[in-house]
Image (cartoon, rainbow, N blue to C red; front, top):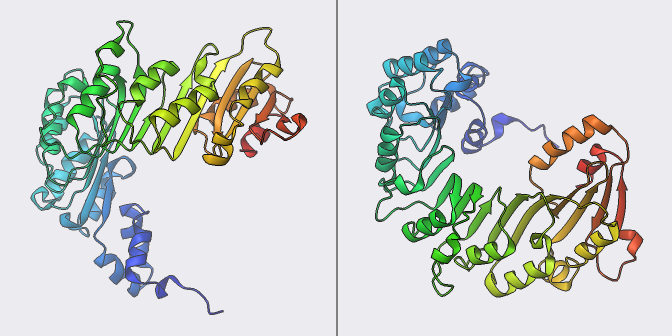
Length: 395
């Protein structure tokens, strides 16, 4: 077999590799390897400038090698610390030539440097905007978002780290957004977004808020639904199964659903039979269902009660028709139950395991139940997991 070499790869493939490197590494390292790489780097035109990982001296130097029209992405998460870098950027780069910017990530704090940068950004070809904001007066930020959303190429808006009032954002009449992430969402706001974003395909909210004023009564009847949404992710909520049913009935065309919920007590959210009924009757197109439910077990509850719960996920619907495998972990020392789909499990599960690993080391602390076929022997469904390492590795 002949020796493989990066030099033998097509230019297009090497450019894809460069997409995973920062601008400084490309200019100061890859470019100097050999004449071939020097030529390839000179042709490269997909640079991301990440101000958070770039020194001021590096920014000044690369401004001599990278033409503005070769920059497609800007990342400035810590703008309140990067005012000097912003000044350097604006003075060394001709911002009128930043005509190929497709992705922008900004950390805003209502400072003068925010406005200075926003008014110089060329957004005519922008596809994705990610804003991290700590501002309590977001007027200028909302004006910028408004200008971005009317651009013909714009598709993705991420506001997961911003506390904007969804109702105050000036959504355009024909908004072309297909992907939206927000920090929190109420039932009323969710319905509002579905009404105003006709092209929305993916919606993610970090937290779904319930209101004691019973907002469900203000939602449209089941006969009113929105067929545009394909993927829904609710990463933190205390919604009941009844509330979920009312919400999901608005979007019967869902193909992917992901739910994460931390609860203080056991309730119907963990009932596999209820979910089976809901999916069969409301979400007939659903292909991927990922969830992670965690709650505190009541004192006196026997582990046999957990087998009854997991049995509801051992029907032909879950194992044969959908092929969704469910795992239940019982943390003996903390009396906590984690119920989740496998092999997919949220990253914060490992974070939750860290304090247990630190407190109890390798002591036996988990009983694991798996939703194996119903005709399997009972003992084959229970596994004693010795410590956090085993729990993580066995996913």
